Length: 196
Image (tube, rainbow, N blue to C red; front, side):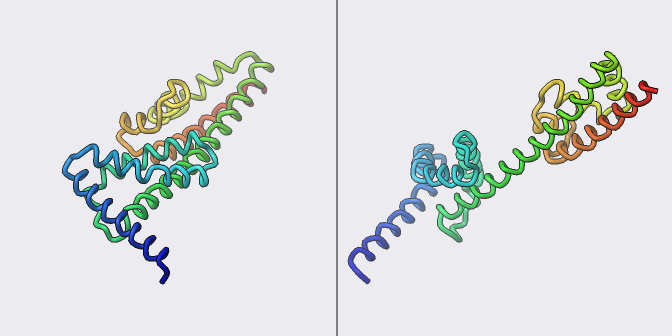
């Protein structure tokens, strides 16, 4: 082992020891210790998130979410791996979740644009899309109608809708997808009946 190798090992060991000291202080409520943990690890998290998401703004959001989670879960960190590895694992999971959310939102925007395109076509052809849309909305069950109105009309987040309907945000996404599908079918049925 060369002198350079032993110096690198010594510095790495000092970093782990310093992290352990900061974790202990942060667990006891020392906010400056947590701030120091953030300073030491946030750049790596941001770099990883930028590489995974190819979007600096999304990477900034990931850094914030990761360190909110680190703060909440620090008491449960058992040191079975390095703090850096633990934080980066949280970051990878958050990036994957963020990517899934973005893909789901894109699919929902596409679905909504199909409904809007159908509405525009109907308006141009019949001038009655508002009536057909209202009628299609009324064909939904009350909970489905609430989902569509809260998200697509009022702009509520999945989390806000979940709080109102007492379900998880992922459940909101699934239910909303089903409700939009039923809405689109009801709208198309109403429009085709009007054309006869």
